[in-house]
Image 1 (spheres, one colour):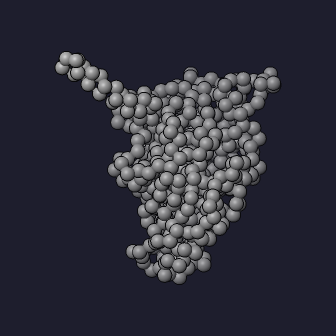
Image 2 (image 1 turned 30 degrees about the horizontal axis):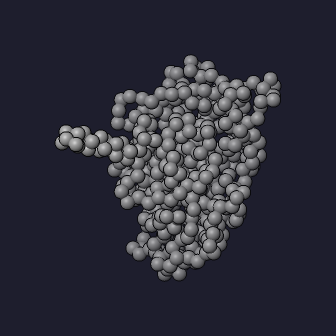
Image 3 (image 1 turned 120 degrees about the vertical axis):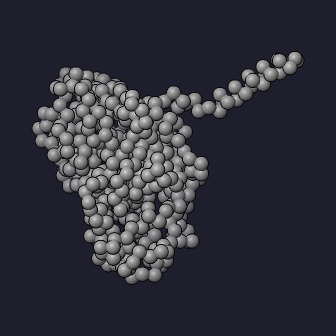
Length: 438
């Protein structure tokens, strides 16, 4: 073979190998960097007040996961009569033509994208005017026979003459409701580093009856695993976020990355995402406090076939909830490791593991969550907070008394971490990051 042919063969093999190693599956995906705002940002609250509000939101959300009942469909939403301060992070994007900027709560624990719409028969106060479909030239109701309606799990096929539109209705544990209909509408996302926009039509819910608190938002943008989620409708196979610690309040914004922008960093660890049509389940296998790994039976944390128990990652809860046996083991380990008096009357009765101390102690035992194939060694600020006002050191952990419910890894444990959801490869990755420098 001549030298020129060898060179041609070498060039071909090099191109082939490089092409083979390129992640084709998402090379043509959209690439978005979006800003997130914490719902308590700009309220000038003390640490004591911030912790109380965060705990209230978390407890309400946990009650939703444990007790919500749905009347129709499979995309429950967590508003209810007793549900105050629901959600944690807000995302803004434009809806309709002409575009209206609306704030939405980011939620990995639900899938439907929805906002309150005029005419609102019985709606909740929100920081911006209700979206008015009559003023949008790109708005169109979806019929009950549409694929989008079917994706929601609504079986109207035999009764479309009675209900021609795609209606949804959810009934919550406290008997409150969210009622509305599904429509196609244009949404606009602005690229953070460019002047151009991403414009496309998606299925979006219009709610006309609601209860609870909108938590400075107009609705929810669901990042769950169902067909109606924003992730599914945008056709992306990966997304990530990086939450800036909000205690003390940080004026900088957190970020969310969609498509090609969502990448893992060197040193990130990965654990499999378990198959599920709604939530992001992972395999928790153990917990270490200090230098001691707590003892649990093999498969103790395993999710059951009926989708009870197990562990999920959640963007919408500040606190982390663990079953009573696990909570007590962690609590006892911290009390043994920390040589401080335990506070009986904890911070606003919202945190069950607090210690009296006049100053913020330098040494705190490590907390490590062990997952299948990955260890989450938490930074101190992710699981311990100190209130100078109350002279209390509290561990951010809460008890889940319903042993059939899920453990929840809340967003406080995910702060200053790059958390990547790789949906094509069914993996969740995480690793330390300086989220305020992104």
